Image (cartoon, rainbow, N blue to C red; front, side, top):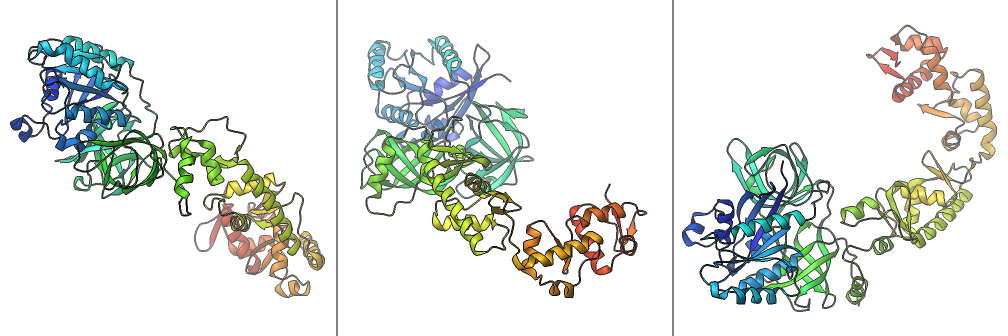
Length: 607
């Protein structure tokens, strides 16, 4: 499949964007009859062509009228390349500035400028180009190529096509291995196929059969890729950048809206609160209400809590899959203007409850790089899983700061915090074993709960490996879920003599488990037997049956010599024991997978 690139148009209404796309592709991007009747693009249009190099170029044609700025943002938002169109006979106009600001806010750095309708105002071309250069000064398109064309006469189209080829050739290769986030711009039903969504694939790879998650305005559910199309052709695999149509399973088109997203399941944080930094536009001041957030094709109302003129917290009306470094446009509903452009700094920000917390948060964010601060993320949490930071959109280097410890299980731990946890773990284990000399150790769960009681920042979920790492650094060992000093064995105290007597009897006859009366005479109760089992000296089977830890293996050697399958009665005779012992012993062997029940009366040894 040839390389494909996606380019969005931008520019003031009636400056010839759709006519230009038609001239380049031979396709009419305006899809609605009303659009063709009025000569006015209202919604997104799509077309494509093959460049001389063989690369495919797909166009997303956006409306230029100020009433349809939201639609324009939905088209430009996911596009990696932009073509800003200015008519020679009209020059730079209001929506030219609005679209320039949107491009700047979205952080789109690759593109070109086309001055159209050159045949209508040839004498204005030098002045229009100078005006364009002046208006683009200081923006991502300041050094973009500026071309002059007439879609009507065809003048300049060959040079434009060559420039499009050059721009796409210089574009950085998209990451086909990245996690998927496809912003939906259309959803519809095709008879016989079902639900289809379209969008611009800028990263990741789509394959037929992929299991995905649809996160949207009214839905959050699992789905699967039934089929794929790109450029009206079926495909098994689609790689970026590309316009793609995705046939989905198990979801109705009526439940999908523009701004929903198809994502790799469990790969993205779905967030409602983010901390951001202003990149352009108005200061993020108090008293601003009713803003709309635009990213990809999504438009979501947000509440803004400013920290200072450059930093703020945004609370979204509905959750979105976002990451650190995402570029966002903020605008007032009904306004043609971009209020501000912001970049996401934190998708899991801390709660702010104390007086002056906003001012302190502004200071924390002020020096934070746009790509994120690993040390700050780890220090605030004490410990965090590496995979979680990757989901946030952070790149976690192999060589970490000295203040961050790469612990087992993929945990990154703040060194000063880890030292406190290690000291606390040693003290907890020492104190509990001093208070309970019969204990074989401290259960991992109990240690974790006690550490969290002392320091609530210790993660409470999936923390078993983290607690084990803390214990290890404290010079402790973890055996069968019990944390203890190396070489520690339970002090059986007065029970030692009774346990030793049971061991002696079982060594003589491993299948002659002591009766309950025998255990009482030896002063071995439930607690003493549990400690002896934790120490590896006895094994409790069930129904009060106590044997040696070696008894199951000894039984297997005898059972393997029986005709297979064998009955419980045959096993009892072979082992020279009673039903009281043989039944729980056989059930234990079944549980280990050493023997297998055939029916209600027979078993066989698993070879």
